Length: 361
Image (cartoon, rainbow, N blue to C red; front, side):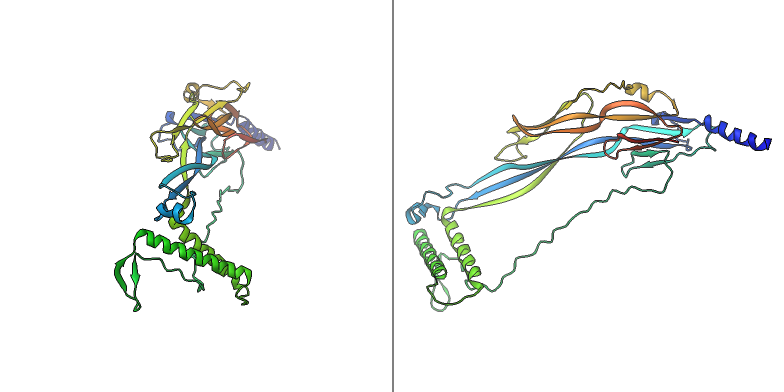
Protein backbone atom coordinates (compact mmCIF):
# COMPACT_ATOMS: atom_id res chain seq x y z
CA UNK A 1 0.00 0.00 0.00
CA UNK A 2 2.85 2.35 0.88
CA UNK A 3 4.48 1.56 -2.47
CA UNK A 4 1.25 2.52 -4.26
CA UNK A 5 1.06 5.85 -2.46
CA UNK A 6 4.73 6.46 -3.21
CA UNK A 7 4.18 5.76 -6.90
CA UNK A 8 1.20 8.12 -7.05
CA UNK A 9 3.20 10.80 -5.27
CA UNK A 10 6.04 10.48 -7.78
CA UNK A 11 3.64 10.77 -10.71
CA UNK A 12 1.96 13.85 -9.26
CA UNK A 13 5.34 15.40 -8.48
CA UNK A 14 6.53 14.88 -12.04
CA UNK A 15 3.38 16.49 -13.45
CA UNK A 16 3.69 19.48 -11.15
CA UNK A 17 7.28 20.05 -12.17
CA UNK A 18 6.59 19.50 -15.86
CA UNK A 19 8.22 22.27 -17.87
CA UNK A 20 7.45 23.56 -21.35
CA UNK A 21 10.25 25.62 -22.87
CA UNK A 22 9.60 28.22 -25.59
CA UNK A 23 12.32 29.96 -27.61
CA UNK A 24 12.54 32.12 -30.69
CA UNK A 25 13.25 29.77 -33.60
CA UNK A 26 16.60 31.26 -34.70
CA UNK A 27 18.01 30.58 -31.23
CA UNK A 28 17.55 26.82 -31.62
CA UNK A 29 20.23 24.47 -32.90
CA UNK A 30 18.97 22.77 -36.05
CA UNK A 31 20.10 19.39 -34.70
CA UNK A 32 17.53 19.61 -31.90
CA UNK A 33 14.48 17.52 -32.82
CA UNK A 34 12.57 16.93 -29.59
CA UNK A 35 10.26 19.92 -29.97
CA UNK A 36 7.82 21.53 -32.39
CA UNK A 37 7.97 24.78 -34.34
CA UNK A 38 4.88 26.97 -34.41
CA UNK A 39 4.07 30.17 -36.28
CA UNK A 40 2.13 33.25 -35.41
CA UNK A 41 -0.25 34.43 -38.17
CA UNK A 42 0.07 37.49 -40.37
CA UNK A 43 -2.86 39.10 -42.17
CA UNK A 44 -2.95 40.25 -45.79
CA UNK A 45 -5.59 42.62 -47.16
CA UNK A 46 -6.92 41.50 -50.54
CA UNK A 47 -8.70 44.07 -52.72
CA UNK A 48 -10.82 42.94 -55.67
CA UNK A 49 -11.84 45.83 -57.94
CA UNK A 50 -14.57 45.19 -60.50
CA UNK A 51 -13.71 47.61 -63.32
CA UNK A 52 -16.26 48.31 -66.05
CA UNK A 53 -14.88 49.17 -69.48
CA UNK A 54 -17.34 51.17 -71.59
CA UNK A 55 -16.38 51.21 -75.28
CA UNK A 56 -18.31 53.66 -77.46
CA UNK A 57 -17.98 52.72 -81.14
CA UNK A 58 -18.91 55.20 -83.85
CA UNK A 59 -21.25 53.92 -86.58
CA UNK A 60 -19.84 53.41 -90.08
CA UNK A 61 -22.39 55.83 -91.54
CA UNK A 62 -22.63 58.24 -88.61
CA UNK A 63 -22.02 61.17 -90.97
CA UNK A 64 -25.52 60.60 -92.38
CA UNK A 65 -27.31 60.08 -89.04
CA UNK A 66 -28.57 63.66 -88.79
CA UNK A 67 -29.52 63.94 -92.46
CA UNK A 68 -31.24 60.59 -92.99
CA UNK A 69 -32.50 59.75 -89.48
CA UNK A 70 -33.01 63.34 -88.30
CA UNK A 71 -31.27 62.73 -84.96
CA UNK A 72 -28.40 64.31 -83.07
CA UNK A 73 -28.29 61.43 -80.61
CA UNK A 74 -25.43 59.40 -82.04
CA UNK A 75 -21.82 58.59 -81.16
CA UNK A 76 -19.56 61.03 -82.94
CA UNK A 77 -16.14 59.66 -81.91
CA UNK A 78 -14.79 56.33 -80.68
CA UNK A 79 -14.12 56.44 -76.94
CA UNK A 80 -13.17 54.14 -74.05
CA UNK A 81 -13.95 54.86 -70.40
CA UNK A 82 -13.19 52.93 -67.21
CA UNK A 83 -15.20 52.95 -64.00
CA UNK A 84 -14.72 51.26 -60.64
CA UNK A 85 -17.99 49.40 -60.40
CA UNK A 86 -17.46 47.51 -57.14
CA UNK A 87 -14.79 46.72 -54.53
CA UNK A 88 -14.61 43.78 -52.14
CA UNK A 89 -12.18 43.48 -49.23
CA UNK A 90 -11.03 40.18 -47.77
CA UNK A 91 -8.60 39.63 -44.90
CA UNK A 92 -6.39 36.62 -45.65
CA UNK A 93 -4.06 34.77 -43.30
CA UNK A 94 -0.58 33.45 -43.85
CA UNK A 95 2.37 32.56 -41.64
CA UNK A 96 4.55 35.37 -40.34
CA UNK A 97 8.05 34.28 -41.36
CA UNK A 98 9.52 36.56 -38.68
CA UNK A 99 7.47 35.03 -35.87
CA UNK A 100 8.44 31.35 -35.59
CA UNK A 101 8.93 29.74 -32.18
CA UNK A 102 10.15 26.41 -30.88
CA UNK A 103 8.38 24.65 -28.01
CA UNK A 104 9.80 21.62 -26.20
CA UNK A 105 9.94 20.04 -22.72
CA UNK A 106 12.82 19.83 -20.29
CA UNK A 107 14.73 16.61 -19.79
CA UNK A 108 12.80 15.62 -16.66
CA UNK A 109 9.39 16.12 -18.26
CA UNK A 110 9.74 14.90 -21.84
CA UNK A 111 8.72 11.32 -20.97
CA UNK A 112 5.71 12.37 -18.90
CA UNK A 113 3.93 15.08 -20.90
CA UNK A 114 2.92 15.39 -24.54
CA UNK A 115 2.96 18.27 -26.97
CA UNK A 116 -0.62 18.17 -28.21
CA UNK A 117 -0.85 20.89 -30.85
CA UNK A 118 -2.94 21.44 -33.94
CA UNK A 119 -2.18 23.76 -36.85
CA UNK A 120 -4.11 25.49 -39.63
CA UNK A 121 -3.50 24.64 -43.26
CA UNK A 122 -1.22 27.71 -43.42
CA UNK A 123 0.92 26.35 -40.56
CA UNK A 124 -0.23 28.68 -37.79
CA UNK A 125 -1.02 27.37 -34.34
CA UNK A 126 -4.69 26.49 -33.93
CA UNK A 127 -4.78 24.80 -30.52
CA UNK A 128 -2.55 23.66 -27.67
CA UNK A 129 -3.08 20.92 -25.09
CA UNK A 130 -6.14 19.43 -26.81
CA UNK A 131 -5.81 15.75 -27.57
CA UNK A 132 -8.38 14.49 -30.03
CA UNK A 133 -8.77 13.36 -33.60
CA UNK A 134 -10.34 16.52 -35.00
CA UNK A 135 -9.03 17.95 -38.20
CA UNK A 136 -10.20 21.35 -39.36
CA UNK A 137 -10.22 21.31 -43.10
CA UNK A 138 -10.91 24.58 -44.89
CA UNK A 139 -13.04 23.55 -47.84
CA UNK A 140 -13.95 26.05 -50.48
CA UNK A 141 -17.03 25.41 -52.53
CA UNK A 142 -15.99 26.70 -55.86
CA UNK A 143 -18.97 27.13 -58.10
CA UNK A 144 -18.48 26.91 -61.84
CA UNK A 145 -20.98 28.47 -64.23
CA UNK A 146 -21.68 26.46 -67.33
CA UNK A 147 -21.81 28.89 -70.16
CA UNK A 148 -24.16 27.67 -72.84
CA UNK A 149 -23.33 28.58 -76.40
CA UNK A 150 -26.03 30.46 -78.20
CA UNK A 151 -27.85 28.27 -80.67
CA UNK A 152 -29.63 29.23 -83.87
CA UNK A 153 -33.27 28.16 -83.87
CA UNK A 154 -34.09 28.51 -87.56
CA UNK A 155 -35.19 32.17 -87.44
CA UNK A 156 -37.93 33.28 -89.80
CA UNK A 157 -35.96 36.43 -90.58
CA UNK A 158 -32.46 36.02 -91.96
CA UNK A 159 -30.21 39.06 -91.80
CA UNK A 160 -27.85 39.46 -94.76
CA UNK A 161 -25.18 42.12 -94.22
CA UNK A 162 -25.10 44.77 -96.92
CA UNK A 163 -22.19 44.92 -99.33
CA UNK A 164 -20.75 47.87 -101.14
CA UNK A 165 -21.23 46.08 -104.46
CA UNK A 166 -24.46 44.90 -106.08
CA UNK A 167 -25.62 41.34 -106.73
CA UNK A 168 -26.89 40.53 -110.23
CA UNK A 169 -29.72 38.15 -111.16
CA UNK A 170 -27.38 35.13 -111.25
CA UNK A 171 -26.20 35.73 -107.70
CA UNK A 172 -22.83 37.14 -108.72
CA UNK A 173 -21.46 40.41 -107.40
CA UNK A 174 -20.71 43.13 -109.91
CA UNK A 175 -17.95 45.70 -109.71
CA UNK A 176 -20.41 48.62 -109.74
CA UNK A 177 -20.04 50.17 -106.29
CA UNK A 178 -22.59 52.29 -104.49
CA UNK A 179 -21.56 55.52 -102.85
CA UNK A 180 -21.57 55.69 -99.06
CA UNK A 181 -24.64 57.87 -99.07
CA UNK A 182 -26.49 55.45 -101.39
CA UNK A 183 -25.65 52.57 -99.04
CA UNK A 184 -26.81 54.63 -96.08
CA UNK A 185 -30.09 55.41 -97.84
CA UNK A 186 -30.64 51.73 -98.63
CA UNK A 187 -30.10 50.88 -94.96
CA UNK A 188 -32.68 53.46 -93.96
CA UNK A 189 -35.14 51.82 -96.37
CA UNK A 190 -34.47 48.46 -94.70
CA UNK A 191 -35.14 50.03 -91.30
CA UNK A 192 -38.47 51.34 -92.59
CA UNK A 193 -39.41 47.87 -93.88
CA UNK A 194 -38.54 46.29 -90.53
CA UNK A 195 -40.62 48.83 -88.63
CA UNK A 196 -43.55 48.27 -90.99
CA UNK A 197 -43.31 44.48 -90.53
CA UNK A 198 -43.18 44.99 -86.77
CA UNK A 199 -46.31 47.18 -86.87
CA UNK A 200 -48.16 44.62 -89.03
CA UNK A 201 -47.40 41.86 -86.53
CA UNK A 202 -48.50 43.71 -83.40
CA UNK A 203 -51.60 45.15 -85.10
CA UNK A 204 -52.69 41.78 -86.53
CA UNK A 205 -52.82 43.26 -90.02
CA UNK A 206 -51.74 40.00 -91.66
CA UNK A 207 -54.58 38.09 -89.98
CA UNK A 208 -52.35 35.05 -89.49
CA UNK A 209 -52.21 33.18 -86.19
CA UNK A 210 -48.48 32.82 -85.47
CA UNK A 211 -49.16 31.40 -82.01
CA UNK A 212 -46.24 31.49 -79.61
CA UNK A 213 -43.78 32.28 -82.40
CA UNK A 214 -44.93 35.88 -82.67
CA UNK A 215 -42.90 36.88 -79.62
CA UNK A 216 -39.77 35.43 -81.16
CA UNK A 217 -40.50 37.13 -84.49
CA UNK A 218 -40.94 40.50 -82.81
CA UNK A 219 -37.67 40.09 -80.91
CA UNK A 220 -35.81 39.22 -84.10
CA UNK A 221 -37.21 42.27 -85.86
CA UNK A 222 -36.06 44.53 -83.01
CA UNK A 223 -32.60 42.95 -83.12
CA UNK A 224 -32.35 43.56 -86.85
CA UNK A 225 -33.49 47.15 -86.45
CA UNK A 226 -30.97 47.74 -83.68
CA UNK A 227 -28.15 46.32 -85.79
CA UNK A 228 -29.02 48.51 -88.74
CA UNK A 229 -29.40 51.60 -86.54
CA UNK A 230 -25.98 50.98 -84.99
CA UNK A 231 -24.46 51.69 -88.40
CA UNK A 232 -25.64 55.28 -87.88
CA UNK A 233 -25.88 55.94 -84.14
CA UNK A 234 -23.06 53.59 -83.11
CA UNK A 235 -23.05 51.09 -80.26
CA UNK A 236 -21.78 50.72 -76.70
CA UNK A 237 -19.94 47.62 -75.50
CA UNK A 238 -19.54 46.98 -71.76
CA UNK A 239 -17.10 44.55 -70.20
CA UNK A 240 -16.27 43.85 -66.56
CA UNK A 241 -12.81 42.85 -65.39
CA UNK A 242 -11.51 42.13 -61.90
CA UNK A 243 -8.21 43.63 -60.80
CA UNK A 244 -6.70 42.24 -57.58
CA UNK A 245 -4.18 43.83 -55.22
CA UNK A 246 -2.59 42.59 -52.00
CA UNK A 247 -1.47 44.80 -49.11
CA UNK A 248 0.59 43.53 -46.15
CA UNK A 249 0.18 45.93 -43.21
CA UNK A 250 3.35 46.72 -41.29
CA UNK A 251 3.96 48.19 -37.86
CA UNK A 252 4.59 51.93 -38.06
CA UNK A 253 2.96 52.40 -41.49
CA UNK A 254 -0.54 53.81 -41.83
CA UNK A 255 -0.73 54.77 -45.54
CA UNK A 256 -0.42 52.32 -48.42
CA UNK A 257 -0.53 53.26 -52.10
CA UNK A 258 -2.40 50.69 -54.21
CA UNK A 259 -2.21 52.07 -57.76
CA UNK A 260 -3.13 54.95 -60.05
CA UNK A 261 -6.55 54.93 -61.71
CA UNK A 262 -7.89 57.08 -64.54
CA UNK A 263 -11.13 56.90 -66.51
CA UNK A 264 -9.07 56.81 -69.73
CA UNK A 265 -6.70 53.94 -68.91
CA UNK A 266 -8.05 52.27 -65.77
CA UNK A 267 -5.42 50.80 -63.44
CA UNK A 268 -2.77 50.88 -66.18
CA UNK A 269 -2.51 54.62 -65.87
CA UNK A 270 0.62 56.42 -64.68
CA UNK A 271 -1.48 59.46 -63.91
CA UNK A 272 -4.91 59.95 -62.42
CA UNK A 273 -6.36 59.43 -58.96
CA UNK A 274 -4.21 57.76 -56.34
CA UNK A 275 -5.98 54.69 -54.94
CA UNK A 276 -4.73 54.13 -51.40
CA UNK A 277 -5.48 52.53 -48.04
CA UNK A 278 -5.20 54.19 -44.64
CA UNK A 279 -5.13 52.12 -41.46
CA UNK A 280 -5.86 53.89 -38.20
CA UNK A 281 -5.45 51.78 -35.08
CA UNK A 282 -8.31 52.02 -32.62
CA UNK A 283 -7.67 52.97 -28.99
CA UNK A 284 -4.86 50.82 -27.60
CA UNK A 285 -5.68 48.14 -25.03
CA UNK A 286 -4.70 48.33 -21.38
CA UNK A 287 -2.61 45.18 -21.80
CA UNK A 288 1.07 46.05 -21.66
CA UNK A 289 2.74 44.22 -24.52
CA UNK A 290 6.27 42.86 -24.69
CA UNK A 291 8.73 44.29 -27.18
CA UNK A 292 9.84 42.22 -30.15
CA UNK A 293 13.48 42.39 -29.08
CA UNK A 294 12.65 40.89 -25.68
CA UNK A 295 10.54 38.17 -27.32
CA UNK A 296 13.41 37.16 -29.59
CA UNK A 297 16.01 37.01 -26.83
CA UNK A 298 14.19 35.34 -23.94
CA UNK A 299 13.55 31.73 -23.01
CA UNK A 300 10.12 31.15 -21.45
CA UNK A 301 9.08 28.32 -19.15
CA UNK A 302 5.46 27.14 -19.26
CA UNK A 303 4.51 30.23 -21.26
CA UNK A 304 3.66 30.60 -24.93
CA UNK A 305 4.35 33.69 -27.02
CA UNK A 306 1.05 34.97 -28.40
CA UNK A 307 -0.04 38.10 -30.25
CA UNK A 308 -3.32 39.86 -29.57
CA UNK A 309 -4.53 41.26 -32.94
CA UNK A 310 -5.26 44.96 -33.26
CA UNK A 311 -8.53 46.51 -34.40
CA UNK A 312 -7.95 49.10 -37.12
CA UNK A 313 -10.20 51.41 -39.08
CA UNK A 314 -9.51 50.85 -42.78
CA UNK A 315 -10.36 53.45 -45.41
CA UNK A 316 -10.00 52.79 -49.12
CA UNK A 317 -9.74 56.05 -51.04
CA UNK A 318 -9.71 57.06 -54.72
CA UNK A 319 -8.45 60.59 -54.69
CA UNK A 320 -10.68 62.29 -52.11
CA UNK A 321 -13.51 59.79 -52.58
CA UNK A 322 -14.03 57.18 -49.85
CA UNK A 323 -14.80 53.83 -51.46
CA UNK A 324 -14.80 51.72 -48.27
CA UNK A 325 -14.75 52.59 -44.57
CA UNK A 326 -14.54 49.45 -42.48
CA UNK A 327 -13.18 48.01 -39.24
CA UNK A 328 -10.93 44.95 -39.43
CA UNK A 329 -8.48 42.95 -37.29
CA UNK A 330 -4.79 42.81 -38.21
CA UNK A 331 -2.68 40.31 -36.31
CA UNK A 332 0.81 41.73 -36.90
CA UNK A 333 -0.18 45.17 -35.62
CA UNK A 334 -1.13 43.76 -32.22
CA UNK A 335 0.84 43.37 -28.97
CA UNK A 336 2.95 40.39 -27.88
CA UNK A 337 1.79 38.81 -24.64
CA UNK A 338 2.45 35.51 -22.84
CA UNK A 339 -0.04 32.71 -22.18
CA UNK A 340 0.31 30.09 -19.45
CA UNK A 341 0.30 26.65 -21.07
CA UNK A 342 0.99 24.09 -18.31
CA UNK A 343 -2.20 22.00 -17.94
CA UNK A 344 -4.02 24.41 -20.24
CA UNK A 345 -6.21 23.81 -23.31
CA UNK A 346 -6.09 26.73 -25.73
CA UNK A 347 -7.78 27.42 -29.08
CA UNK A 348 -7.03 30.23 -31.51
CA UNK A 349 -8.97 31.87 -34.33
CA UNK A 350 -7.81 30.71 -37.77
CA UNK A 351 -7.80 34.19 -39.33
CA UNK A 352 -6.69 36.69 -36.69
CA UNK A 353 -4.90 34.30 -34.31
CA UNK A 354 -6.98 35.65 -31.44
CA UNK A 355 -7.39 33.40 -28.38
CA UNK A 356 -10.99 32.16 -28.47
CA UNK A 357 -11.09 29.31 -25.93
CA UNK A 358 -9.33 28.55 -22.63
CA UNK A 359 -9.80 25.45 -20.50
CA UNK A 360 -7.68 24.39 -17.52
CA UNK A 361 -7.25 20.70 -16.74
